[in-house]
Length: 478
Ligand code: APR
Image (cartoon, rainbow, N blue to C red):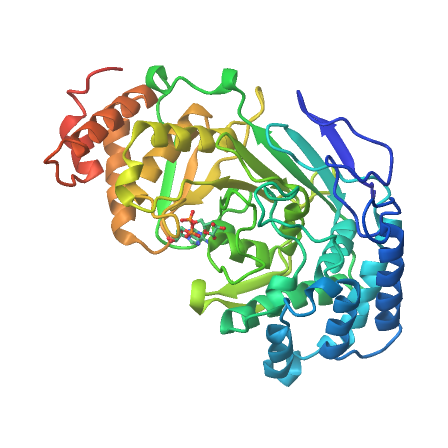
């Protein structure tokens, strides 16, 4: 079953709108909109221009990068001297001949982008700050939206001015992916092009749906951590494998940026960007998801993994196609659930030992981990959330996630990502906490004491687990 765009009310959420062409601040401004614009040419005229350019490309068997660039600039003339396409040019010259199918792929992506008015018949609401709501799109609709992002047809989002309409949104057009050549860009483009090669292949059956849900933790749902009496749930720790390879069937944590997808369309290549490159359908969330607030998260259900990879950061390599063998649920969504939560970014690592910051992280994790009341939810696959680019302390973040999981009655599968020392210390700490029947509230009190000690004037750094070990019996409150 293919449906257009569904919006589900969740509490104070959005109200579904039937209109297909809503040009206002609650909906995605679509390239194919026929709405009248107050300044400049009407949107209808712009789509006419886009259609003309894309139709010309789509009618050819083979298209050179120069022609792709010329088309993009025709309908984005303002960016003629600002956007660079050197990465796209160099990429096509550099990839091995056996993999160089791009000239014949460009016309197919153009044909897919042209289907936008047929594919999206209702306005797509924005998932705005403070409003829990979800959007379900078919995989075909997503491919069409991403083909438009590839050709940079979305009305430009001015994100640099703080008062600009889309200031709080991620970018969506792929222009930033096409400039500033680097080895990283090469590998990113290999993954993205592979996605388009699969979805434009006539033998591909893209039959599923994907749901993007914004969740907000209401004040009334925010736990009183200090008085929480829950015991820890089960924990599995390993230094082998990774969240996405071993976490099948679990809720898989995306170590996110508050602007979902982070640097996926730029040069970022850490956990989140890699996740978005191997599951490119996730990228479409950038079209409609406003920057996450402290008490918000996004859960994406049903995205397909198209690629395998190896490495991380500079060593990342696209490692070929991935056949996604997951089952589908009753909504025809692949049984993959990804939870995007953004940790705090600590410029100075000492900042994190502060109960206000710790409570923010607890609430952020809990917002994602808490399930629906009365449902048995799967366990959570996570790891060093916030402990790479965001400079968090892995020991502290592991305790925070254990507490949030306990409060949500869910177990944790914790992937230390080859950190054997953390694997050992976390296993030992967990064993101690369980043996001593430590509750979430007691752990909270231990963290309070720990922060106090660290902030004593002459205080030197004390290892968190060492501190817990020494103070576990003498803690001041339950
Ligand atoms: N599975 C398990 N653990 C992983 C994986 C994986 N696939 N990839 C990385 N890790 C571990 C590594 O130890 C890494 O150093 O998680 C750590 C943190 O990863 P980061 O991606 O650096 O996460 P974070 O510190 O939260 O930074 C988030 O980086 O990717 C951007 O958009 C993202 O802006 C955001 C920021």
